[in-house]
Structure formats: structure tokens, C-alpha cells
Amino acid sequence: MATRGFVGRRRTERDPRLPPGQYDTGTDWPVLTAEATPRIAPENWSFTLNGLVATPTTWTWDEVHALPASRYDGDIHCVTTWSLLGTSFEGVSLDTLLDIAGPSPQATHILARAKTGYTTNLPLEHVTGGKAWLVWTHEGRPLPVDHGGPVRLLVPHLYFWKSAKWVTSITLLDHEEQGFWERNGYHDLGDPWREQRYTGD
Image (tube, rainbow, N blue to C red; front, top):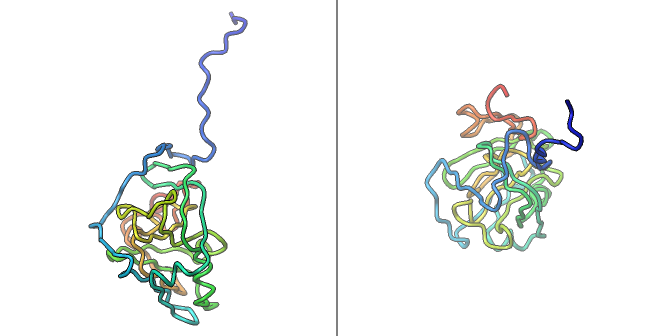
């Protein structure tokens, strides 16, 4: 027998910003690192864009800060299932750096390298058109060293292992070359909305 007015327990609405399999970590930003944390003074930091480009270019800390600044406001998602929603970073768009270096028409992929030797691969189309940045602030403060400071790659539409900490170079290639986690069973792309966590997903 139905009872008038009985509606049962109200189902909690899931935040539409959360990809499947993810949870909202609130204001906590977990620290997950596969390698020892390097300490890089800004005056000793540099970033190189090379490979299939017209003008291989290296920027110092002051030179990269002299470029037009860019800001990302949005969400980030880790393959370990946490998501940090409504967060912000500032730095320079990778589009700005690529415009200076001039990618070759043959370039299809990039390989990002960190000071630690960590690498990760990405299709070029996933780091152009306003999809990727080099960032040095988080929530208006210098990027903490545990999170890749002084500068990390930010590719927020993919799982965060693609956003290499302590990034020091990007090489443009005419083929895909797997990085550290990709060689160890992670997906080559890592789209959180398609749950591309591991090879074969």
C-alpha cells in the first residue's frame, strides 16, 4: 500500500564536474610522487622546447615570466580517483611557447621531461588550442615544491600524471614515444571522462 507523501531518503546529487569513478577531495590536494622531490631554485630553472620545431628555444625564469600570462580556472583529476574542483593556476599557455618555437607540420606528439627524468607522452592536439600550460602559481601563491614547483605542466582535461611536475623540456615528435607511467601499464592518453586509466581501457 502506498503512503501519501512518502518519498523515501533523498538521493545525494553527484557534482556534474566529477568524471566517473572520481570523488571530490574538497580543499585537500593530495601529494603523489613516484620520484624523489627535487629542489630547483627559480634562478636555476629553465625550460626547453625542441625536436620538430623551426626554432628550438630555451627560456629562463625571467624570460618565461616576461611572456603574456595566462590563467586556468577549473578542475583537475587524478587517476587514483580524487578530483580537486574549482581550483586555479597561473602561468603561460603552451600555445604561446609553441608559437615562438614554430612546430613542424610533421609534429604529431610531444614528450615532456622533468628534472627527475620522469617523462610523459601526449598527442600534440591535446596540448594546443588552450588545453595546456606551464604554471608557477596555485590559488595565487607560488606552486609548492611537492606539487611540482617552481614550474609544472598543466593538462587539466587529462588525468594528472600527464601534468608533469618539475618540467624542464618538451620535445616534439612525429610519432608517439611512451613515458614513464605509459610504459608501466597506464593508458597512452588518460581521458578521465572515458576512465582511460590503464592500457586497454
